[in-house]
Image (cartoon, rainbow, N blue to C red):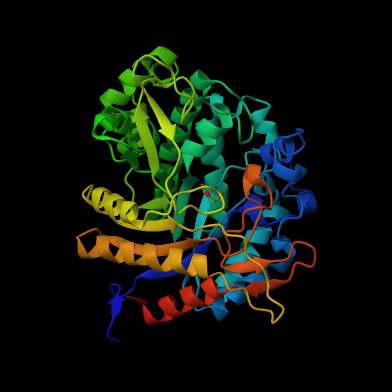
Amino acid sequence: MAGDRVFPPGFLWGAATAAYQIEGAAAEDGRGPSIWDTFATVPGAVEGGASGATACDHYHRFREDVALLGELGLGAYRFSTAWPRVMPDGRTPNPAGIAFYDRLVDALLERDITPVLTLYHWDLPQALQDRGGWLERDIASWFTEYATTVHNRLGDRVTQWTTLNEPFCSAFLGYGTGVHAPGLRDPKGALRAAHHHLLAHGHAARALRAAGATSVSIALNFSPALPNSPDDHDAVRRFDAVHNRFFLDPVLGRGYPADLLDDVAHLDGLHPAIHDGDLDVIAAPLDWIGVNYYAPTRVTSLPDPTQPSNCPLPGLRGMSVTPPREPVTVTGWEQHPESLTDLLVRLGRCGIPLVVAENGSAFPDVVDPDGRVRDSDRVRYLAEHLRAVHAAIEAGADVRGYLAWSLLDNFEWACGYGPRFGVVHVDFTSQRRVVKDSGWFLSRVATRNAVPD
Ligand code: FCB
């Protein structure tokens, strides 16, 4: 149709979720506690004292949720398996827990929806945290055992395997700033934890491949740094190193960026964690990179380059994060679709296919008396970001798919149930689902493989 921007044939359209944010059923069928169950009990850790104990009750309602994906005409569903459901103590398989994902995958395949399975979306078994969690080097083999266990059960039907979701958040927010589980505030430990995430990724990616997986990926969260003035280019470099290149470069086989190693040397966490051969393990071949993008970050250089900044890694020097510019979403994230185009074009030069594995926005949605959710802000955000993806493809980036965050309103980590990111509204009391205008918009885009101008 005239005025449409058409995506390449076979482009994958879908929506994403994560286990702890939607499943609930925290103590059912032998599931063990995760670090998020524990963290949620710490006073003040989660807004409103909320937890994922019930969340969207997806564990019991997954058939209804899969039917929604079908109704929306989405061809892919990105979800995560909960390690503490599959292995309650982190090491011992729990057949009843794995059986849930068996049912979920079958329900998706019955509707021709491609499962895109993420093995780790932040819900570490508490039993492993008690042994050091991501600070402990052995986690690379614990994670590999877990990955292999899930693959043994589902590998005959699941073709798309993603090892980790956003190791940046898991390591730096979990072990550095302490705003996520397990809530530790230790910059040195955060760097060590980050290296162990990458090591676990590399070992698991190799094990999955050896077990026959034909598509293996990792989902990284990127935030392009934007300078406030021409004097801020060193701040841009520093932020980009710790937030973006830290994870991207090693998985692409380039090792850690030299400038990053310098910038964090005084924290003494990264160098000591790296053993001979680790970087080769981390450079396991990948089929695509999952690009999670929400917003850019405005940064400024500090007059004294030794002055510590608290963002994004406590103890990092020479730069600080400054307030976003309007328009922002309810989480205070700047809406800047041009940054998504620039990011995809830049990543596209790495020569590896890309999938936008998360992109979305939170707004104060309400169900109108006529039963409709008129989330025009989200429709606009989606349209602008889809046009941004299209522009990147036109500029040569090899982007294969777009998975909206999120299918459902859900437990938004430390923010509790406040920010609603879903294209489907969830009433957390009745568990009623209502497709928002943005859900129908995404559905039209997916079925026509085109976004309107
Ligand atoms: C990402 C997370 C996802 C969700 C969105 C809003 O960083 O991967 O679970 O919280 O942000």
